[in-house]
Length: 350
Image (cartoon, rainbow, N blue to C red; front, side, top):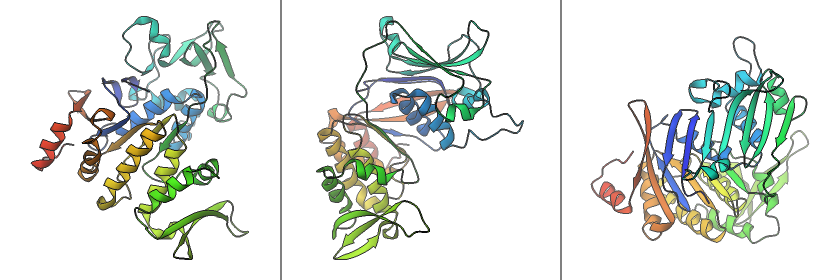
């Protein structure tokens, strides 16, 4: 579990520090303050395949598309991950992500992404964590990165390589879309986790008795979700944004056992009247499935709903506000008593 976090030279952040984290963590802030970028920083640090994570972040925002000058090199595209869209100067400190380090000996636990010039005078993007480095030639086309380490990818592994670790489950619930819910459902087939998903869906539709993913007609590919409600079979997408958002969140959560869950803009698609119950599910599953959760919001309804569960789980949750002033990001940690005061006086805490 991450007990603290720092991000340097990443996206909007020259530097941002979070001194305390818990099992469930909520981050507040106005639009465009850097909340999504913070989740991306967590994602990149926690992901075991750094190159895959980098590719995923850039493609998700269409940053992999060719630029006005026609360049689609790794260097011209990966620069968007760096602060001010500028690659680090060669051999200088690049992007740093990870827990706040008190002792120099623990520095190798950080994720570092930097540009270097190697012994062959090649300009290299190097990604390092736990003494394991992966390199990509900056001049190569981004498609080489997209095809996952084919031509041009190099691997440098220290003699002091750490012992292989078990796979870590990591799920990122975006502010829109529904992810690969078919795959996530198949992952929990014939387990009691399916019952947990159905129970959560009943927050919105109490008459729901089951869900199934069925093949579409021959003209379409893939499977779609359908629900059984009072004996009727209903396409899930016809049931509204709220229940589809809950399906996405809870499926992601039960697929993150013993790992991490990131949720961007929790409130999207969720009516204020159901948010407290969804938070109850999140706190419960975080504990029973051993998941650390990081969530962003700019909604006072979401904050109130979070507070209803935080009250009985003070040591298991944190709430932070991200601010930007004098060209610097800062993070304010709230105590539960601060939230109560703010809400009781109808003071916005964004």
